[in-house]
Image (tube, rainbow, N blue to C red):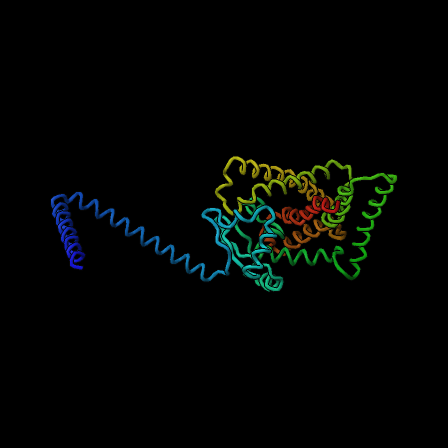
Length: 346
């Protein structure tokens, strides 16, 4: 013990002597003293910032639902794989019907319980849309991508007008809808009969049938199976889905959208979208030139009638927040995404 005490005393004397010489050196070299002081101030500042950030993260984590830890930058995105929904189901079993995960730089809360989903989306606080590269590319229009008052106005408008067009379970409109469907059913049966019992690929036949029911309601347009426009649009939709699949990570880590591969995909999406919009614009212009308020044919006519009504009442700028009404119709028309999905029935 005596030896340890001696060693401790000697060590303390050495430290005192060292500190003394450091103070003497500093006093004789004020420029060095200022430099050391600046570096100490910087270290203290960085420590304070780090502590504040850690406390902020801790407070956020405490308020969030439980969830898995991820890795820097990628978060839990690196572990989701291609079939994200199946991984979400596994996480829900572990963490419950509501859990959180950081996907890339985006904090995400996943709701997988039916009752919670229903109760959540009844609240106006949850009618917003995330500000992601996808939403920016789609301009944030229409019933799918809009939010707030614009979304509520369009939802109310479409709910009422689609019921008038026959999208209902009961009432007179149901008969109108049945006629539209039976027209496509008859064409579908005719195509089968024309095959003379030979095997044919049913995917495009089902696709054009389903698409025609929707297009007829939206803009009184029907396509045939060999129609070049229908084939082109089907290709554009499939291409769009493929490209969005390629750059899905961009929504979680926005900075990577400027990498060459992602940038090319984004430019292709914008180009394809422009091509489809041009067709829709032609349809809307044709409807404008033949519009008759006493003979409403489809949803485009209903939009045009509402626009005319708004002009007469002096509220044009308020109608759908003054957005391009053509685009509002177009997003509904995107239900034509159904054709590529029909391939699942093969």
